[in-house]
Image (tube, rainbow, N blue to C red; front, side, top):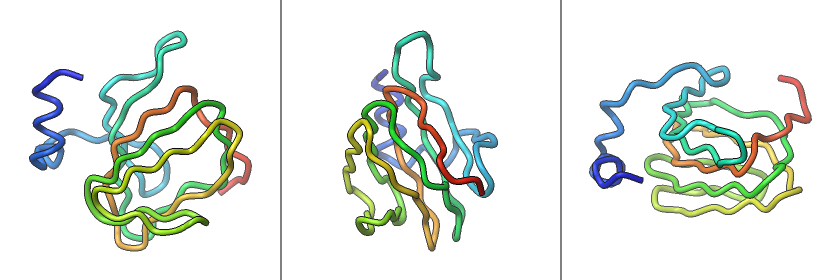
Amino acid sequence: MPETTRELLTSGGWKELAFGPFRDQVTIHWIRPFEDDQPGVALLKYEAGASVPRHQHQGLETILVLDGVQSDEAGDYGSGSYVVNAPGTEHSVWSDKGCVVLIQWDRPVKVLDAE
């Protein structure tokens, strides 16, 4: 990751980045889109009350919570939390008050529950 991107993430500069549609009430800023077999890296911004339906991880997923609180069935993860979801694991995700996370997926997830 370029040093300028790292500085933007740690200093709150992500607030100035452009985010586009991802899911209902969740927007995305791609740092590195999926390409061939390379992982995808992005920022996800959850509005208050936003959720992502139950899904299965087809590859490793790592998350760093930059702001707010992200939740899943295992608990709540506040700013600074680092979450690892192994291939084959399943969960749904939500944020009661909103959050921003840095996420890296080895492979796209498979959505199990329709919204």
